[in-house]
Length: 108
Image (cartoon, rainbow, N blue to C red):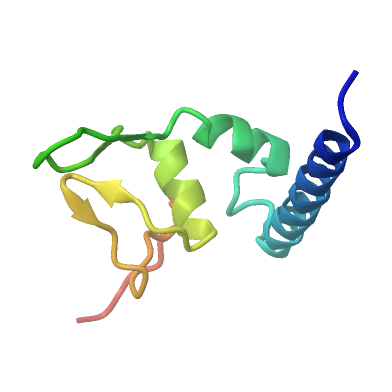
């Protein structure tokens, strides 16, 4: 049996998780389905689940796994900072989703 303190702790963690998931659902639903490739929030969570930081002790810098194209798209759509090619992606200029051949001609 778990103590009352342990059960209250678990309940609190579940409550915070529910708040975060509802916030994620709202942010995902605000993005056009075509831009997010018709992924729902569960698909997005599954796709980014392998992105992680590797921490070394001592004077070594932390490393991040290389994000996949889908992970970069999700992070950009949700405006989440991530590391790509040794740099932190600038949130002022997020990567825009690709339009698969429906590009407009730009004038110089």
